[in-house]
Length: 243
Image (cartoon, rainbow, N blue to C red; front, top):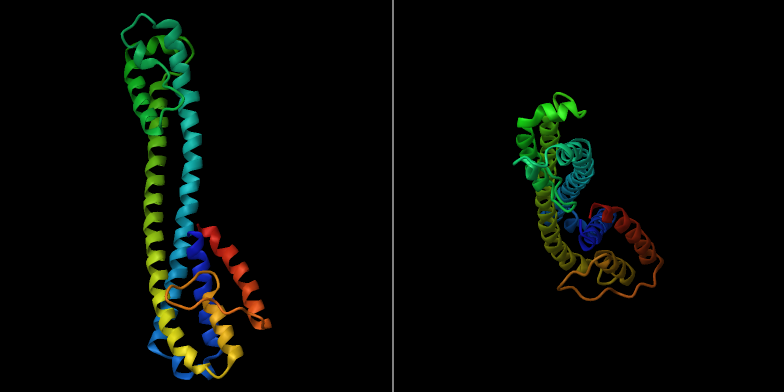
């Protein structure tokens, strides 16, 4: 999740706990349809963030695997072929296709070059085997290229799913914020005569992300709001890891 969304989720969760902890005082507000929708939306956001984190980790793992497979393709398969071609086949028409690609070649381009190299090496299998490559070096080259291609496909799928998960989280947070505004309008009149509880509520629903359309956070002097600030820092640090 992005930092602001992580902080906002922490705000939503703290607001939910506050209402649950003061259900007796809040009465109908705590059992209202708005509160039920708010609870459901927070649960949906929490589930979406777990999926989002999973896809992020899978994408990172695929990126690491891609680097390993890319290096293996270049150094273990393509480089020996290019070296032998330079030493023994410089006069052949296939020599250009048997050269190593530049270091900055993308993985997609590297796969194409590797397959072109395999095709160009086919007429000269005997030379490559005599110079020390295995009988199946062309098949091994093709398999290495296919392994890298499969890794790229896996990573692209994870990234696409991560983007979709982020959109789900963002839309859920936006909806939950709307519901929090409704709850705020219902809760403030209940605590109108209790300045301490009102300040605590305002501090709770303001921490971790400003809600547009709401007044600025009340300057908190009470111990209760001090505790909420400490909770906010811990929650934000935990949720930011999903970014």
